[in-house]
Length: 498
Ligand code: DCP
Ligand code: MG
Image 1 (cartoon, rainbow, N blue to C red):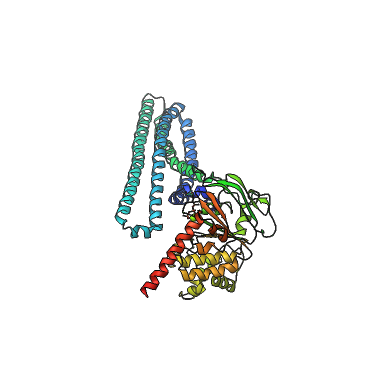
Image 2 (cartoon, rainbow, N blue to C red):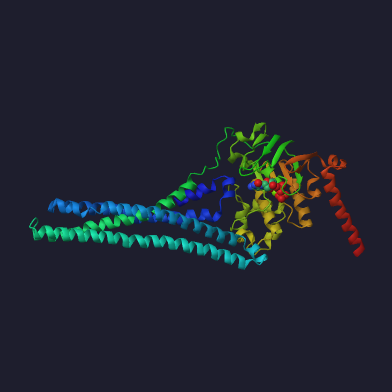
């Protein structure tokens, strides 16, 4: 079950993961699966034993005296009613308890992941009190749950105690009146205890079933989520794509969004061309490139890859053809070597890995680490600097050798010298791939065959660097002027200092 969930969760869509707290999912995969396992190993097995004991003893007493037997079980409806009432109460209490526990896990998980932010802003005390509040909430919810259980036991025992007393008195009266023999009475007294015991446990099981049911429902909520179909496309080309991309009036809105993030985007990227996206933060650059591997589905217009609509391709094929160096690359807590060869889908030699690392200008850096390529990367790459991480991510993508390359701000967190090194390496690698470059610096985008200037999801300008700088009122020219002005001022400053 746990393996299934793990696999399932990995295959859910981006929008599901964007809206579901990680701690909540962790909670379901660990605690709820445990609760369900406990339910099956402890409760479900008990049911058979109880039924058997009850039936045998009830038949035995029936054989002694029918009247006595019937008198001994009048309590069953009462016990059932009480159990069902508690069942409902405990279900609700347990639901709240699990939900609170999920909140607690989320808080913990976020704090561990964001520990640097917490420290940098000196928010330990705030986070501590938030955690304490959540933990206290869990304690209170747990207390309610415990209270429910502790109420049920005495109540059910009192009811059953009366039942037993009633049976004894009734039987004794019958014996005194000579309706049954003393021997029958003694046999009855011995047997009735074994009749009450299963009834008592039945109530307990009904109440405890609620926890199993709640966990089951919580797991089903995840299981019912649609997986992202990886192999749904009819169009499955054998070889690699050429990388010819046509955007026609493409618009896009996030499933939880209110307005279009991209509006009527049209352009043509020919195989091997470099397309640069320039635009202020939030203008939709990342959203645009995320449409290509079908992380999200565009909501209007169409995108053609090699003259076939993108939606006709399976996601797995597209993702094999497209390599992305993300804005914030994620590295696994594994060796550098494993991180670079991640997702290549075949055995790769160390030479190949080194070649990719050299191209990404990270080889020299890796050699300075204690174990070279076998050095472990700390959780989320804590031991690597931002720029180093990014270069490892570039090496990883290069090794995949994709037809379409997406570089999302990929040179933003490296120094100017390294940036020049990487750009040189990339120029080589971009040669026969369609490449998307997202950057803020004019130097990074001016070499592109086509530059798209985005503003609030719209392409406001399009062309080569030479064409765009000519337009005096255009946004591109404005960005260009500002950046060259900064550079010029820097030169003057340097001259003055010298
Ligand atoms: N957005 C959203 N849901 C997401 C991601 C983004 O609603 N899961 C919104 C936020 C922005 C808009 O979409 O208003 C565009 O976001 P992008 O990430 O595409 O913006 P950029 O990549 O252009 O910005 P940056 O330069 O900061 O990376
Ligand atoms: Mg972005």
